[in-house]
Image (tube, rainbow, N blue to C red):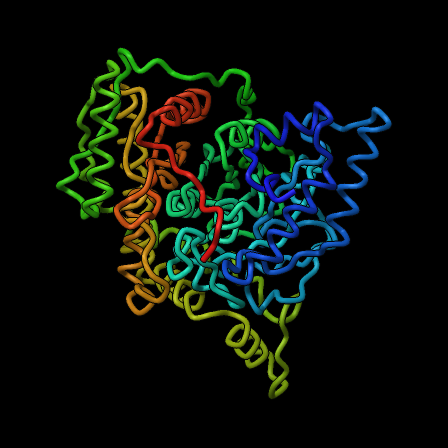
Length: 488
């Protein structure tokens, strides 16, 4: 049974459908792995063993009776703690929502239920998805399975770590400025941010509404493409979902690099670690040898992505988090009996330092006298970044960059310097600002045995091309990234 946890998503899907594996056996193996391993990784905030096993038994019974819901019936999936599931606590890893039980399902959860997936909530995260290391959780710091002294990335660090530690084959996260791709990179797995509007945000607790997107993590490429097909589509409950042709995973096939134009960046313009820089250049050389044409792109606007992102994201966060006031739901701190004190006391006790920092920054940038100087200018710069991506894709088929400028750093290494922490997202935030899709693909290990990730980006709603290129990257020998079996 122990070897079941090392199966890829594709192998699990095949074995469940040919009858050589039951969902109960598979789920039991993952639960045992979690019991043995998660004390070191801390990916999960809770695991309801009884409820999970009951779901697996129901799936097996459906298959026995010829009533299976889909080819995915019985596949386990982890859920980030900011995606609502009826009857489950959805705390966003925050004390202000520590005991909040969701009364409804997010749209993505409803779609997964219709297919028969087995839910493993709740995966740890940076509080309200604000962070790059999962050190901002109010409850625990998740660790990197390749080295538990290092961070797994964030804000979806628990979702990435659970897959990398072979505690699950797939999971869901959310990506506002890189919160799927960056932890996927640091944990050596696959992570996709779909085009903004491809996947419904209904039931995702909002951080920055114009940037947030739900997306999948997987231990292989097929898990990414299958989940995107299931999750995507127009949703009447979310007016930001787009009416476009549906994504079909069957259209994803390995790309022939010959004649393809790949947009690349000048590595000397960015502070990449030596190992990341070396692997990036090795991959480019390999693709050039396969017939691809490398096209240098001008990423000069990228230096503005971090300040633009943090002005827009924090402004939206200030607005979205105003609903947590100690009155309607969530933590309530009674004090002097004055309404203003109730607001202040509840929010002071309920929010962590990083959330408070971003609320303050966002409130300031939206305030009278500063709106045009900061938020207004940031929105104008965002338009320029979006236009630049449109220009890029007139001359290239795909953009290829490192996902993160470094591999995983040690726990506590950057907590005292928020600006340094924010710089970890230098290569991912511009994608969210422009709304285009991007995927982080495993790209081997550095000299310390830590994963390197490579980011692919294509134009709006062109996920078929994106995932076809990613499937081809997976074939490169230098990109093979074995996941750790033993967690020290």
